[in-house]
Length: 367
Image (cartoon, rainbow, N blue to C red):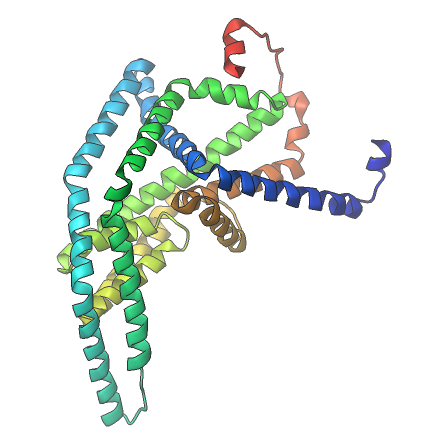
């Protein structure tokens, strides 16, 4: 150990780097091998984390925990059933309608582009020829959207597997709500006392800041844009508004969603597409500059380059769910590294740790 400590810092880092890369590669292989199971566990942890907030609120009002858990689970079930009866059929209906009318919208967009091209050539003497490129782009976009819609509408083929995965995730969620505190205690007690406390605090803060804040912002943005689209009489207003709200859950997703929706509406009516773009961007700016700072503050503190890298890795390993949890995990890694460099994990004297007595109850936690 003494000889290892005498090595230059650059050499120590150079020797550790291949080991880190190898361990990272092994972790990726394990995650990909057990991907369906890991996705179910991650979804259950996420649901339990979100549902724990209303449970804690009811406990603060004097409601017993078991009764609070039962009430929150029953309310969640009622909300999901209500959404499944009302909102989901409308969204599916509008998806089908979009798939059916998209070819006519493409024809309309082509005609509008041809009209503009003729005007530019005859009135302004501008040699513009965008019809071929525009048609190819729109046909490719149409094929992608129709394929995506077909996969959504054809999910009945995998209904049994989906139902089993959902049931397993629900069971795990209920178990985590009932016994999650003991489970996390058992996991973090493998670390030294001060390190375990700090890691637990950082993990809770990062996931809280991202999911609670980002979900609130997405809901506000989705509802506001949907109401604005309904006022403008935008076709498929509900589908487009909710779609932009869902895109906003991901970093850089809001602009991407607004661009897609504006382009689709512009195919049917160019000036309406311009209005949709202007209204959506204005609402997003208000949401980002006035609502977001009050809710999120400094969300992650991550460099945009690391945000993009974490999103790519999350999508590669876990698909949509990986995209959702990539940012808080990357933020947790950054905060842990910053705390380690600041020496917070070495301040053992500031924390009084009590000896752990293994009883029959605590022994069951590790089994």
